[in-house]
Each structure stands twice: as C-alpha cells, then as structure tokens.
Image 1 (tube, rainbow, N blue to C red):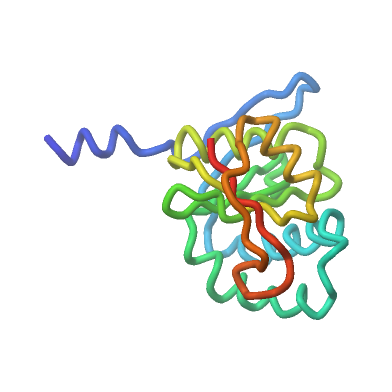
Image 2 (cartoon, rainbow, N blue to C red):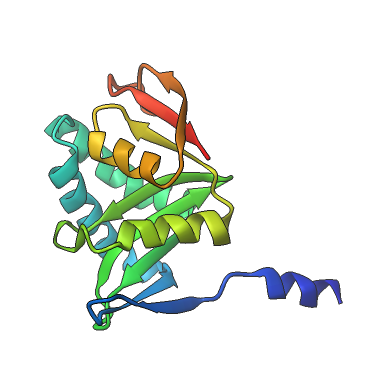
Length: 167
C-alpha cells in the first residue's frame, strides 16, 4: 500500500502544455543521452546572458557540468513538438541549481514553465542567482522569490557574487 501511495506522488514522466501560439512544449525527465544537447543549450544561454563571465571560467565549468553537476540534480527539460530541447532545469534539495533556456527560445514562457514545475513538482523553494545577471534576478523576483542573502563569491570561489533567494 505504501509503495502505491508513494508512486501516486511522483511527477509524471512527461506532460505537454499548449501555448497561445499553438506551440506544444513537453516537460520531460532528462536522459543521460540528452546531456550533450544540454551542454550546448547551457553554453549558448550563458553566452547570451552571462556577459560578466570570463571565457576561461566558462571553459572550466563545461567539464564540471557534464561530469558532475548534471548527475547531481533532478533534471527536467522542455522539448518542442519536434523533440528539440529548448531549455532545462535542475533541482537538488529544494534548490533550483540550474535553469537555462536556448537563446532562440527565450521569451516564450519556457523558463516560467520550468520554474513552476520545479516549485510544484520537485519541491524547489530556493535559488542562487549571479548578482551580475540582472535578467535572472528580475525573472525570479517576478515569480515570487525574494533575496535573503548574498555571498561575495560563487560556488567555485570565483569573484561572481551570488544572491540567495527564497519563496
């Protein structure tokens, strides 16, 4: 009985949302085979939104993300009707650890959809945002997060201050 109740609480493997434009977007659990595409989305997104990040730091992060970070979080992605990954979100221990959207898919509600899924289905209530990333700060504030603290360096000890946010 307990196993049955637990299974009923699990988020669906995939679900689709129809956007006003008629586009269908699916949120799916990320498979290991998707990691190469995710790192492409990550890099394109970072280049579009993290102009403060030094190239050496970006290159240093890529293998860490591929070899450690993706496996450390509960990953979900949004795919369009053609099965192409448009963005992804990783949650661990109530924290949105990563949320990246392909630059050509920005402004279509994908980030909001992934964040809502992370909050409602994955139990996320906190996020850390690079202080220099004003777009991300504004996005999280818009959906209800508030700044609760600040760290002068990022998780790798680099001089990229983090703002700690919570619902």
